[in-house]
Length: 310
Image 1 (cartoon, one colour):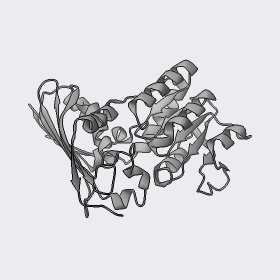
Image 2 (image 1 turned 90 degrees about the vertical axis):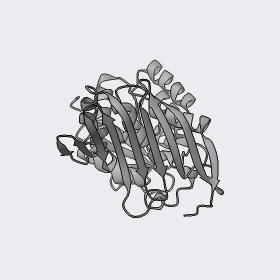
Image 3 (image 1 turned 135 degrees about the horizontal axis):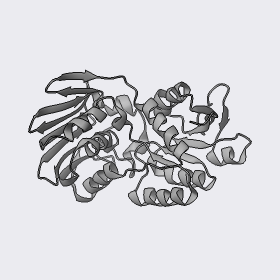
Image 4 (image 1 turned 60 degrees about the vertical axis):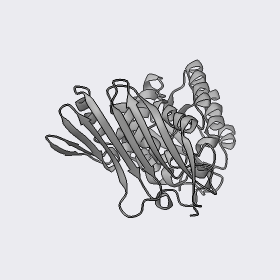
C-alpha cells in the first residue's frame, strides 16, 4: 500500500456505522477517518463533521474516499456526486435501490477511474472462503438456507427498511444470497417465491423461496424477521461427498471432517479489500445477490399477513 493512508469520510452514522465501520477503520492502518457526515448525529470526537455530503465536498477537509452507510433509497445520488469529485466509493449492502442505478454507477466509476466497491460483508465471514474452495471440487445435490432473526433487535425503529427499496426481510436475506451466489459451484436462479407482507407495510416480513442451479440441484430458502430468542443464520449444502454447513452467518464452517471456526472479522476484511482496490484503482461490483432479490419481487406471490408494529 501507499505510505499515506486513505483519507476516508463515513457518510451516515447509524447502527451499522457505529457497530462495524468505525471500529474497522480505526484498526486499519491503510485508512484515516478524515470526516463524518450526518444530519442527525454529532460526529466523532476530533474528526471533522458535516451535516451533508455537499457541505463536506465544499469544505476544507481533504478526503480520498467515502463509505456510504445510508439507506439504499438515497445512496445513488451520494455515490454519483462522490464519483464526480474523483472519490473512491464504498457502498454498504445492498449497493443501491435498483439494479439500473448500480449499473449507472459502474459506468461512471469506469469512466472516472475511481474505485467503486459493492460490499457484501457476509462473504467475508471466516467460513465462506474455505466453503467455496471445498464445494468447487464436489457435486451439489441440494441446499437449504434458514435466515431468521428479530427485526426489533437489528433494525429498531428504522422505518426506511419497510418502504419500497428498503427490502424488508431481504435486507438480512440478501446476506445469505451473497454467500450462496459466492460458494455454489454453479449459477443459481429463482423458481418460485412467496412474500409475506404485513398489512401496514410495503416490504415483506418473511419469505419462502425455491432456487435451482443450472445442474438441477434445488435450493430452498426460509426468511423470517419475526424470530425471537436465538437467531438463525444457517446454510447447509448436500454434496456427493457429504454435507457442508455454515452457521452463525458464515462464521462457523462444518465439513464431514469436523468444525472450523474463525474470527469475527467481516468488516476488517472488507476494508482490507477496499484498500487493495483503491491501490489498484479497480472496482468490485457484483450484483448477483441483488438480482435474485429483484427476481423474487418480480415473480413472487404476495401474501398479506397481520400488521407489524415495532
